[in-house]
Each structure stands twice: as C-alpha cells, then as structure tokens.
Length: 172
View (cartoon, rainbow, N blue to C red):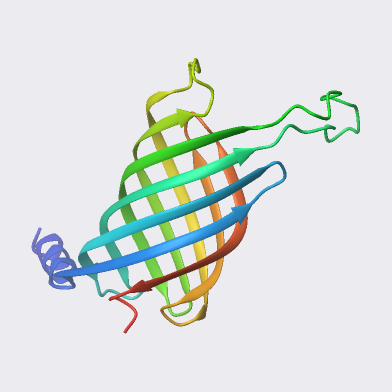
C-alpha cells in the first residue's frame, strides 16, 4: 500500500499546470481526398516524466474535397462520367487532445465531436458526430513548419500526408 501511494505521489509530482497555445494550418492529400485544416490547440497540463506529454483541447475547422475516383484498386472502372465533380465538406471540431512530444516529433491523439457540413444542400451527412483524429508531425523548422501524417475516424473517414505551418508557445 505504501509503495502504491509513493508511486502515485511520484507520478503526480511530474504533472504540472502549464498552459500553452499552438496555432497550426495544414494541407494534406490522400488517394482521392484533399484537406485544408486550421487548428487552435490549448494545453492545460504537462507531464515531464520520461517523454514529455501534454493534455488539452483542440478547436479546429477542416475543409476537404473528396474526388470521384475513376478506378478501383483492382483496376475496374467506377465513375464513367468524367464531368461528375466530387463532394466538399466542412468540419468544425471540438476535441480533447493528448500529445506526446519527442524533440522533432509530435504525436496527437484527439477524441471528441464535430459538426459535418456537406456542400450538397439535401445531404443526410450533415450533423454532429463522434470523431477520433490522430496526427504525427515531423518538425522540419522548429516552431514553424514540417510534415504531417493525418488520419481521422468518424462519419467521414480520411487520412493523408502533407505539410503544416504554425506557431506554438510550447516549442520555445
């Protein structure tokens, strides 16, 4: 019992209230999907144990375009109408966020909710849904820009690789 109390005390002593703000924009592309996103991340807690990690919230908006694929992975034709356009969506996210930071690499895990809006006026896809977003960032220019690998699971699932740019009070 004493060892459990000691362990909890040791872990708690490493967590501090340390507010930080990160503003980020990103452009990503996947096989048939292209996204533009803007995030405001607010950290509340910082865990200084072994690998630095942060907990907070993410407020973001994402605009993405899903193109109509003309073929499938097996090579068969799907969309024979070459003039048919894809669909655009706008998401507004309110997500919790846990970030693990290791020097030039950040990994974000963000569960929460989002509002999905399609460009089609009578779309049944409009509404509020649950979402889990994951992104990994490789910082090429400290506190400014790098590569991003971004994936999300919700009503609209997507993923891709791209670039990001931004500013963080955490990366001093």
